[in-house]
Amino acid sequence: MNIDKLLIQSVKILLLALCIGINASQAERLKDVSNIAGQRPNQLVGYGLVVGLDGSGDQTTQTPFTIQSVLQMIGTLGVTIPPGGQAQLRNTAAVMVTAEMPALSRPGQAIDITVSSLGNAQSLKGGTLLMTPLRAADGQVYAQAQGNVVISGAGASAGGATTTVNHLSAGRIPSGALIERAVPSVMPEEFIQLDLKKSDFSLMQQTAQAIGQRFGVGTAIPIDARSLNVRVPLDPLKRVAFMAALEDINIEPTIGPAKVILNSRTGSVVMNQSVKLAPSAVAHGNLTVRIQSTPDVSQPNAFGRGETVVTSQDTATVSSDGKPDNLIAIPGGAALSSVVKALNMLGATPSDLISILQSLKSAGALSAEIEVI
Image 1 (cartoon, one colour):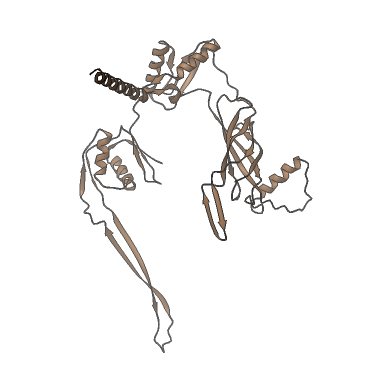
Image 2 (cartoon, rainbow, N blue to C red; image 1 turned 180 degrees about the horizontal axis):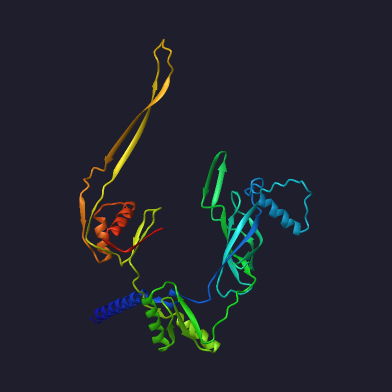
């Protein structure tokens, strides 16, 4: 009997823990919904050369900038080529190097880079990127990149047959660049500014209340729907502990505006829980137009003087899917499940839903913002 009671009690504790975990998982940390003003990553870009390719580099006759870059590079190393000399480089490729410099980066820190072919190289597999300066939007060099390119794809060819797996013209170099210059950053003495990742007055109110409950009323001062000032300690040691506790504050998520995302390329339709549908009626039907051309040969008689002529017999037919185009009444629904159930009544494909949802929006029956990507 005691064992049964202990088992029941354990099950209750487990269910309570699961409920607490579910409620906690619905909240988001402040670091996930906001950024500290001024502490953001920066984009870096550079132009370089990849060498050591197995005959899969740029065709220099079609990419003159590759041979020009090679001549300039080896010229700085003391190697000169006589005027008028022809150089055919099949193991070299001109590439663009891109990277993201994290916030608060310091000299000597390694970052990952992406190497992409600029010319007509068939593959960068097995190549080595030579030292390439990476510049930011201000034109200053902030990092130097160099290393062996890692390509996840593979390719093979025999005769006229060629097959490839994944992409061979772009790859990555883990820790392939070293930061050479830090971006100047000044930490305010009394206040720091937090910027929410989306402008929302409801989320701003939730954030200010959560900070006030944790550190006291008046610690957070909202500026607008995106930014707020937070009072921080003046002591550097206390400030670090304060920022660590600030980023771990849980913020209750708010319900965003009703939105429907339509992908015109893939036909996918995604909607959030705020979408509402008013009572409406929709007629949906598919028509198929088929045009067929049959070649025919017209020959003259045996002793005629005519010529053989090739003609064609063209036929055009229009058919439906066999279903009557009845007008289907769609009931209104305030919940997402009701909207999905109502749209499923149409029996339309995702690509058809794009035009149906746009028509419902135009008719005023769909209470949501439609965004086509």
